[in-house]
Image 1: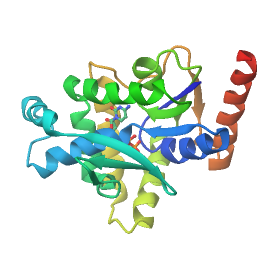
Image 2: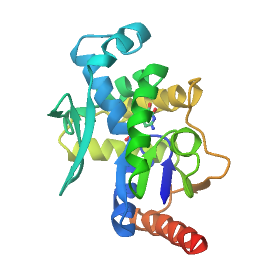
Image 3: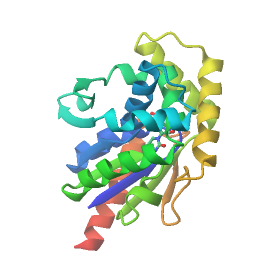
Image 4: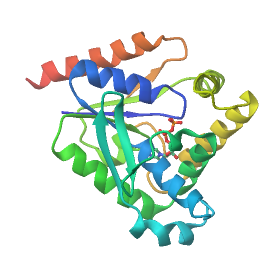
Length: 223
Ligand code: CDP
């Protein structure tokens, strides 16, 4: 069984997805981490992340893989664990920029589909229900108001000891929302058969419970 969770930045996708996958006994795949790793690779090589040709030219030398430990999914860039490096605000913007480039998406989608072919997965991202796993049995579009999403992301960064400015976090988020929704290839949008879950006023636990309820009901239907 496949569960697709899509939505804009700061809707709580990763935290909620991780907890829901654990509860349901599914493998959690964070596809955003893959785009972040490609963004990081470009930034490290001094490539402008909006330069399609420049980014495309380094793709063959980039190997992305994932593994799991007690803290969850770990992401590797050419064998180096970059899980902490990819969370910096500048890498969020780099990820959104490289995610516009079709060659980047094709490379990562191949890896994502390969992972889903062999496991019960709960995968989160922007295009999972619409493009990566169109046959997913459960599709959820998780969203919240932009103010609430920016506040959640701001608190998260501060908790991690990363210096952040609320207005900048909000501006980055609006930039990414626009970039992600308006790109030509596999843009961010709810799949026609998705359930829209606005969690502006829901707690983390309530969001997790809601997703698990939907998944359990779907599972029961299938049996
Ligand atoms: O955690 P947050 O929601 O801030 O972002 P993320 O899920 O880590 O994704 C980072 C960026 O990667 C997004 O802004 C998208 O541009 C891109 N992305 C994508 O295009 N498609 C996906 N399936 C996942 C992420």
